View 1 (cartoon, rainbow over the protein chains, first blue to last red):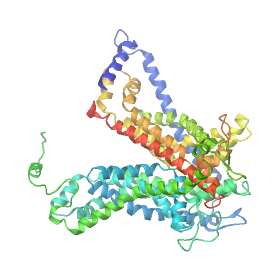
View 2 (view 1 turned 180 degrees about the vertical axis):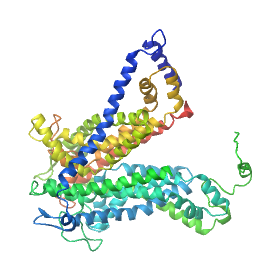
View 3 (view 1 turned 60 degrees about the horizontal axis):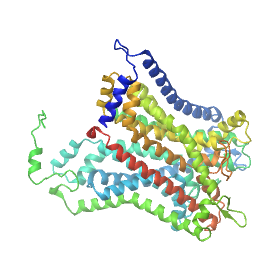
View 4 (view 1 turned 135 degrees about the vertical axis):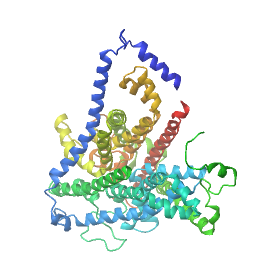
Length: 306
Length: 324
């Protein structure tokens, strides 16, 4: 590596005659840099531009649709009129439920991996599982939920199946952020607690977890926001095309914001007639998702500063 | 090892005697009781859950997917050119879907890889900390946009635009899907590449600058070569993200199960097929099993990409200061 790089450095200096006899840089080298940096800056701007265009587009087209009745009424007249209350409630139940499943399991996994486990094959295997779980597409989670929770466990297409499927989907996110939070707790806390004679569990439960809690909660918020925007995983497991009722038991089907957008935009018979509702629903969804995300980002920033 | 510290040096004593506070592994000896061992066991079992879920996904996909191969041979399934699952007799050839997935993923990577890496270079090397603190949340929010919203945007904005500009019969096509997918995988590529670039040892950069190289020359001849395996990992994970992404290709790819011959052909990638057809497929019929077999293929694809990425990032770790 060292050899390779030093050879290249030699080429820069000697090979390209980029240095003038008086030892200063040739102007074209500075210009080349300016041009390249401008291109990099433009590439970065494209990202911001894309985000701004998408959000701006939804706000401009969607804000008119949103009103008190839009947020508090169920849809009627074959979904061409009315509001999206069942979708909002459904999405909240599904995403918070998924977190209720994933947060304890994920935190416990992270505590084991970070505080208890000895490095070795077992830990490597578990980390392999987590990494691969994180990379599995959500549609595959949907198939799994259909085959496992809906069919095999006989839970049917229900809130419960959806919550469990989404819980499995956000589990790697929770474990990842919880591990990060645990490793940011200074080692001196652990040492001090154990030097006082506390057992490992006492140290974990009374010293380390309280110190890591804000970081763990940030991960939980990110997980909720991920679950709220998820469509493919709930298509076969929890979501229903239309129901005017709010769910009363974990075995009910629910409407959900992302699925509602998809259904109205592609499968409905009156795609153009429901366009305002589509815009409104999309705006509500991104407010929910980006709002929670922004909250997590800002919260994390204040944590890092303190 | 000399450290100027006001603390009395405890470590020497601990190292020689029987350790009271092992770094990991055991409860403190003074209170290591049954309760602690029970807690340790419970935590261990919980940690296994991720692995169990992964295994269960594999098992259930295969159990529901394998039966189709009693009707169609694996080779006929993979290479068959006709996907007519609902006609009589049905034909289950997934080659057009496979090609659609590959095409959409390749084209989207063509956009997302340069864009993501360039953004990462800008963030890690050029932007001031203040600018960086603005860009980073922007990229994170881009990553957080729900795929259904991006698909919706592709349908109502990008599709009419493409249709008018290129005078096409439909704006819902391979190009549209690739652009929207690129938008989704740029944050993945960017975040991981940035980490890789940041982790290049500072002495390398300083050495290059001290030899008279410009910042640009340092970036392209020193920093990028040193972080190449990390950047490759980033691109591969971006590819893996694209190939499995469902809602975008379901909404904007056009849905025609044919082998694409141009960038503006409507296509039907694998995830779109699963999502669109599962609701209509008779429970545990051939079509249902065929869709699960598609799920198996998707699973194997992403798993393969993740394994390659893990291997690459394993190599990447060795490009630290220790080996230089």
